Length: 312
Image (cartoon, rainbow, N blue to C red; front, side):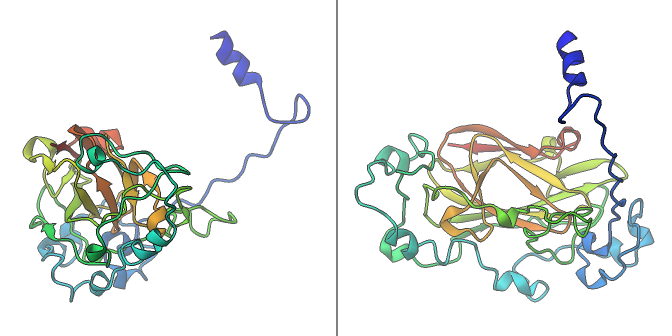
């Protein structure tokens, strides 16, 4: 208690007794149609969507996702540049130095020991030359068919990466600059330069009025674990169909955010997904175990937005 009282009396200033003007509150941000994945209706900017239900919005009751294979409904998916996949091959090889002694070992390639942490003397694991060029993932662990109901109040009609967007309330608020995910760049090259062989797509779903949260419309007790093979390289794609941000945390494994930095993609353990946003990141399953995968708004996790990732 004495330490707490001492800390409360300290301040940043050149003399005791100095005071500063309390800054004004930022404007209260309002959710818009764009936050529901209705980008074409984003001109309804001043509309407060909080508390609105599906029967108050024409067509919402019958909205359901047809699948990402239907590129006609989401043209940006077809030509989406998987960050680091097109140029992460030959460019990475051109910068490798043969005298760097700490490249991945055979045990690490087989998943028997974890990969090295990136550093100034670690080499980058690359695929054979025949697999250097960009190619689609071999297997798509597809999107679950989502239907609007108690667990899924809405499904976004259109989603997109918004890594350059700081989020609602942080745009045009008078600050000179707000850092975003697109500004992140790792200090060292990532250790694993292999392309993913699988793509796992997960929808972040929920019902704010009933306070139901989950992945693909299922809470933790209803969902099967996500199985990863030890040593494999996987792409996770998160699609937020709710009107709240969700910071998604994968325990035990690094998440390499695909933000355009290529082989310098930032390593993260928690990735925040904004409403109507689609975010992807790469995961090397280099550590066996049962790992928690959940929203880090812990009241969302407790209400069902939780899965288990099993690496074996």
